[in-house]
Amino acid sequence: MFRVAKRDGARVTLTLDGEPIGATAGDSVLAALLSHGPILRRLEFGGEPRAGFCLMGACQDCWVWSEAGGRIRACTTPVAEGMRLFTEAQVQARG
Amino acid sequence: MAEIVIVGAGPAGIAAAEVLVAQDQRVTLLDEAAQAGGQGYRRPSPSLAIDMAGLMGSEAGKYAGLHARFERLRPQLDYRPGTLVWAMDGDRLHVLTGGRAGTVRFDMLMLATGAMDRIAPLPGWTLPGVFTLGGAQVVLKDQGCLIGRRVAFLGSSPLLTLAAKQYRAMGGEVVVIADTTPLYAKIATSPALLRAPRTLLRGLAYTAQAMIAGTPLLNGVKPIAVEGTERVEALVLRDASGRERRFACDAVALGYGLKPETQLADLAGAEFAYDRDFRLFLPKADAFGRVRRGLYLAGDGARIGGADAAEASGALAAHAVLADLGLQQDIAAIRPLARRVQRLRDFQRGLARAFAWPSRQIGALPDETVLCRCERVTVGEVRGAMTKGLGPVEVNRVKAMTRCGMGRCQGRVCGPALQEVVAAAAGHDVEAGGRLRGQAPVKPIALVAAEETP
Image (cartoon, rainbow over all chains, first blue to last red; front, side):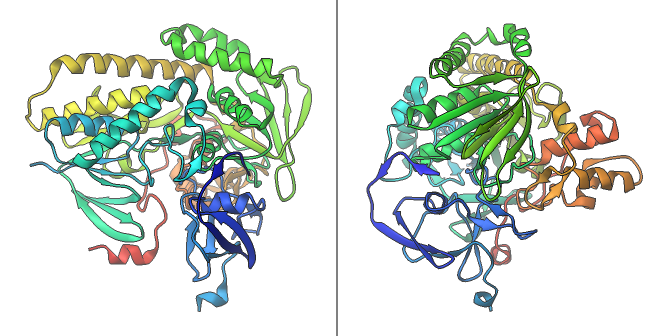
């Protein structure tokens, strides 16, 4: 995914599997993560890479894991400062 | 006063609310998105500098007009953006707003839930970089992003050339526009399309622009696979002459026309009938969109008709609400609206025939093709389960045996293709296999949210 329009807004930093990713307030989590790398998550069934599909909140393929063990639908969730996201469930963090 | 609730703030929901508010009705408008407009008239997210007028092209005036009308209407509505309706129970909707659960009571319910792309799977379609055609446009309007730098457009839809034009204009490279429909099939059905000449001419213009830009434009293709290991590397297909061709790319947009989002209509008890032109099970309603007194369907969520038909059908359904409430109606306004809805939906029916859903190709997909992306169920697993099943073949039984259609998307993505695979394997037509039934929650919610419900 690559950006073709500029955005004015506060700089925001989130992480995916511990790696910092810069974004701008107003970005969706999906746009922020996919303009940085090709993958959002690993499928629970076999671990194949996924990056969402419908981009409009219908297919539910773009859910990423949050630190607390919850899931975030990346295409409809705006970025927030300090978000710590994961491509796979963080079993320890859930305990 | 009656509680009138509209679900969906696209052109249909907005037009319906306008008619009802003009008659001093109290309207609650629930919308899952953060901003009104639906998918086609999607607004950029805040602070994004993108030329929407340029992107919307010939529809720029309508786009600006709808949003201006909504802003005037907004103070007169109970408008609740960011609200998911996930279940229904008698006269109550179960909703989730920003993670908070609640219920909304209604006397009259209008569902204007819109549509999404209909998808034919092919080997490799779950790779990162493959997205829906509508999604490729939404992420451009909403986020100012292209799905890739070098994009292949595949499917059967006039929207392929429109999206390709938008991508070229924004600096993307379009490596191929590949349509599974043979050219002769499109020409044979074009008389039906002459009823909406403006739309037809617009389509021809996009095609001409693609040719001028030197984009390969293929008709009658047979998709073979999306290739790649961790992400899309190429689209491989067989062209109409039988030659195998490989297009290197980093993204693929897939679109085989649109399908209505009918999950809530299903929960509300609407009956469904199989439509041979769209090859979909669609909810039954009268010419006004009335399913029964108190339940109304409008816009693409009822029948695919496009944005103009959605607006007119929203207004028309609102008049049905007023009539059913015993309120005076504007008879002079109703007849032209009904004619407009009919004409535009007939045009879309013509398009559905011209840009046919490739049912035979889907029925013949190789066994290893993933059919259900949520649960990773392959075409071969579905065929295998069917040989073990006893009794008549029915898609809900196949779903129970294989989990195909049971995942998070609730069969939105795989449903139409599953119907074709089942019908082809059973040797009967799609109608005989039945339709996947909707279940609450229509989208995933946290268990705690369901427990919180008052």
